[in-house]
Image (cartoon, rainbow, N blue to C red):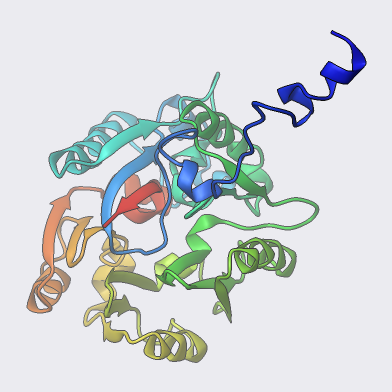
Length: 316
């Protein structure tokens, strides 16, 4: 090919050149895999889980691996399988992380490792050395599923996905505390701001783990919160976004049996921990349909259904 014809070739922008003009969000489900969320209450379509293996009982000292008690692995696996089936029963696609070799004991808490946006995933960076590297396996699985990673928290930033949630498609609340530091907040907020999203930052009380532990959203106008834990700025942000805030009536059930640690399946429909009769009755009085599974063995690892579930996609 002579030089004159060369610069008329499609490779150089000549005839046949096809510019990529679609927004990344428009390529999801086409160029990329299906994924994306911008609310916490829209119909849940797909999740990412890690089925626990021998790593869950590898240490004889639960505290050394940030757990509360020693765990019966077989019982924990049965309960984890029940959670996955609970999702499948309502039409949710379940994917698994599937790390190579033996992962760290806390790999099961996938919610901490990823935060989804309408354009793809923000990959977390866990705050503890005990959990360092768990995000690698999530990153690999996201890539295998065709989900774009639009940000990886870097430097000395720490961020865990359970410290952020969508209040509406234009607003995200992020909690700063034990697991998410200033630098992590700034990095995540920077990416969301580029999307035109308003970010509301709140400080979490000392002794709390995640924002998820004190706030869950079940509909466009209804949030469930833990009194004396959700800070004033968080309550104000919810009210500004048009939410009614229902405070749980039984802190004992929330503390001992993870009654607030649920996942919203669709507006006013949740998958929650079994064995919380007072809290379940309270939810049902608000028009919430409750699907329940036993999670008491998994709860010994210091988390429950919400912590175990990485949300990948929600739909209308």
